[in-house]
Length: 178
Image 1 (cartoon, one colour):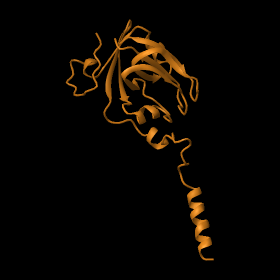
Image 2 (cartoon, rainbow, N blue to C red; image 1 turned 60 degrees about the horizontal axis):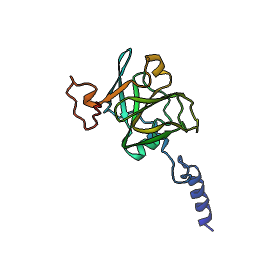
Image 3 (cartoon, rainbow, N blue to C red; image 1 turned 90 degrees about the horizontal axis):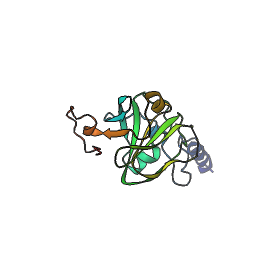
Image 4 (cartoon, one colour; image 1 turned 60 degrees about the vertical axis):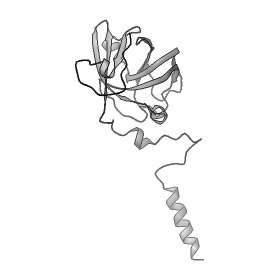
């Protein structure tokens, strides 16, 4: 009889847990996804008709980082973003599930040119966005920034030491097309 109140208390404690059980095994940790960006940001430059546009981006290198992406973020710096390298290159498809802010998605070919811009992707949308061709990477920046900066399909993207050759940058994530 003395065990019954203890079991009720244990059940109530479990019900009040801050994290719900995984649904389908693909739960993304909101705290990890919304955590502050890592200190190591990668320089990225887009050569557009209007000049060079520099960004400092996070890199989603692992499958877990790519799954979380920019989900649950409430803001993104004007010249911030997230880079999703595709090695080997492949046809990538992204959606905005659990993404709170609009984003521009730039799909980058292996030659560094922008194949497609999914402009102002709608927060929470489950509609897939894709270039429909194999890409070396996808860059997510703030919604509307590509148009605001005059960035267009065909512009060339570089990152790492290739983006800032005059700076002494140590990274293995160099993308030097052409």
